[in-house]
Amino acid sequence: MKTAGIDANERRFQHIKHEFEPVYDQDSRILILGTLPSVKSREQQFYYGHPQNRFWKVLSALYEAADVPATIGEKKEFLLEHHIAVWDVIAECDIIGSSDSSIKNVVPADLTEILENAPIECIYANGGKAYELYMKYSYEKTGREIVKLPSTSPANAAFQMDRLLEAWKQKIRN
Image 1: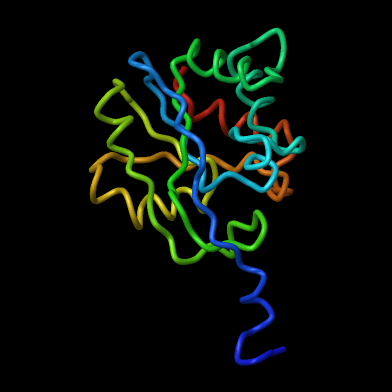
Image 2: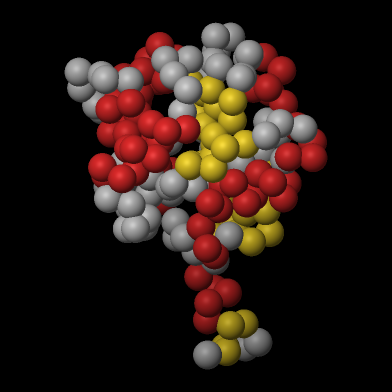
């Protein structure tokens, strides 16, 4: 449906700017890139904040943690303790809600901050869209390969937790 020359779908797009910093330190060896924080993550001001996202459960299982980190402080501590950096491929874009498939008008994140200040050995994409966007906007600039992992998003219904964990175990070098 069109209203005054604007498609109804177009009105649902929001222009989103990434509002929080990457997590890394001088010892980070693994970089995991998502696309852009979800609505829930933006509300919480931290990565993978949707309660149904399996990111923190997968990492906790991979590293055999006693508990899944719950607070932002615990999550940051967990990442740094395991030499993991986390950021996103997108600095800003137009998106409908949290739908990666709706992403358009991408401004890529400048990954040089992490890549120049941490001894990153491997870059991983949390999902196909993060991989696709990295290859389109960042690969030529960084010259660094990226390994595609299945998304931990609740939208990735094709991967139940056991299958998701096994796929991550096969690719992540910890």
